[in-house]
Image (cartoon, rainbow, N blue to C red):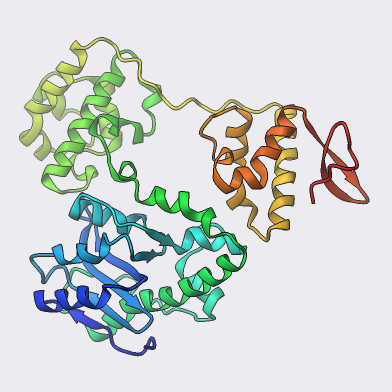
Length: 395
């Protein structure tokens, strides 16, 4: 198969079943989705592209009333599902089927283990690995419109055709360096349902400015944000179509008790007042009746002292040293924020888990505890044990 071979177009139940049969026993399949969400709460699933080394296909979910046959291979634990920056793809499957495909291989997560940039874009990945410059002809396509032209389908299929080739290159390189196991935790996180759930009672935490509310303003904001989340889901419209964030904040400050007061709130649509006015007033009144909430707001980061910044700089130098020795992008090993979490003693710091701990995390802990030190010998930075500064060099 080449990128010029037209993809199979799957728009009938029989064709969908045949696709599933052809994927049985495959060790992996590359996949991508096209969706629209400008006018909906949930992403509107418009197209599924799949590819293996010898064929590609585009599945039209808008033409199919039953997508259950997809589950036979999507959730087959023997088939690796290859994606690039796959979180939004997984969100679609979680909403559609109530569970998440596994195992996964995300090429964006894997690429930095070969020294590529963190969060590298798909076009950049393909150009680097395959020397191909992808066209952007249909980047702004409305994928919900039908019929799709042959060139649109070829454009969509190219995403997974090249992804399949990129996957093979990445696996070869990562296996050659003995780093396959390093990715297991990061890939498993993509299949964690908690990543795709938005509990209504926590919706207020995504609203900037909540920290400035006084009195029972947080009570009201929490209640209103939860109501908006539930309403947007029920009507399948974007949250902002119900009430915008800044209007929720104004309502939390002003705490109107009747429709007339509601109507005076700047930015609150008259249609929303007519449809939901009573409910909004009831939500506000109920929130005000409850004891003042002591909600855990994310603490504002304190400005680091010069001494603290120096510690972070020293740890960062060790991270860069180890990254260079292992041909890694330093950011994938540890970001500045990761170092701050470690210095702050956070038990779930990323540097305390998996391959990062083995490569540099334990060493950084030794430095923080005073068990190890840094020396410069002949222009080279080394980590040493304090009792033997010239024999414990970290090579």
